[in-house]
Amino acid sequence: MPPAQPVIAVQNLVKRFEGREVLRGINLDVLPGETMVVMGGSGCGKSTLLRHMIGSLSPDEGAVLMFGKNLAEMNEARLNEVRKRFGILFQSGALFNSMTVAENVALPLREHTDLGSEIIDIQVKIKLELVGLREHADKYPAQLSGGMKKRAGLARALALDPEILFYDEPSAGLDPVTSAQIDHLILALSKQLGVTSVVVTHEMDSAFVIADRMAMLDKGRVLRVDSREWFDQLRKTPEPQSAGLSEDERLIRQFLRGDAEGPITERQDQSSFEADLLGAVRPVEVTPSVEPTRLK
Image 1 (tube, rainbow, N blue to C red):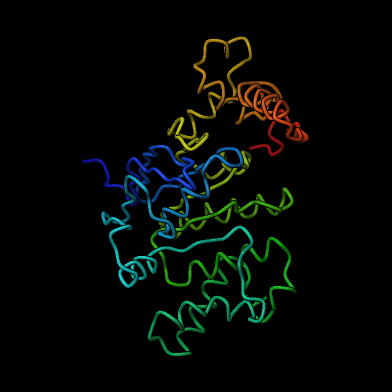
Image 2: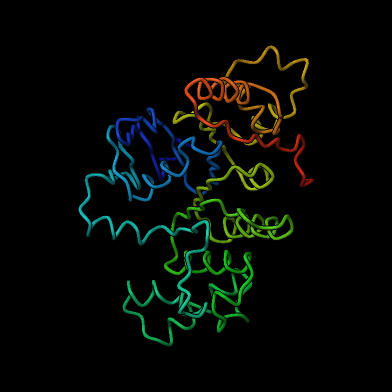
């Protein structure tokens, strides 16, 4: 079998803001039907990369191809047609507070299709059933819990039967049980609908549950793109053996494990010292947990 053509191809992507290079030559292919997890610390470029993938930002150099077409070369009308082929779950859910859950899900169908009201109502019920919210269709966002808002946002993202789903920090702000429910929902939708998923997250418990492949970003560059198994093996590398790892592998291992000491914190300490010399206030450091809290 010939290798599958990527649904999304990020090619030598460079982005600058006010002369500062935020993305530094990113290369990343997302294959049909897979769940690609894009991870990294705060400020590493994850959200900027996601915004390029959905066409809300244009590269300074390089290109983002979706379905083989360069997004930056499309006019607004063509870009809107492509956008109908993917859905986005925003970090906050991004629901319209003045609309019920059902009205939120129906909105893309009313705006972008010629379907009649009866068909739209059926489609809304199907999408809400997929995420377990059919009985809450008439509630407003203010009446929903955080997890329910995420699921309602996901139902809206599914409204037009997309080929690609983008998730921006789907577990952010959720308790462990609700976060696990969202993870299993992502897995179930991938299997039932066969959609391609791109998940931006720094929640490692979630990443190792849902990922087929993972991409680690650091300071605007891709350190590694590999299978979930490769990253899991690196995460479990014993401390005595970690000395033989490359600098990038040691950095990835620290991030995956949440270790308090390693290349990331050494770099932060150096940056803080330099800032202190210039009179800046040193930020308070937060020590993450050493082991993942969720058992597989």
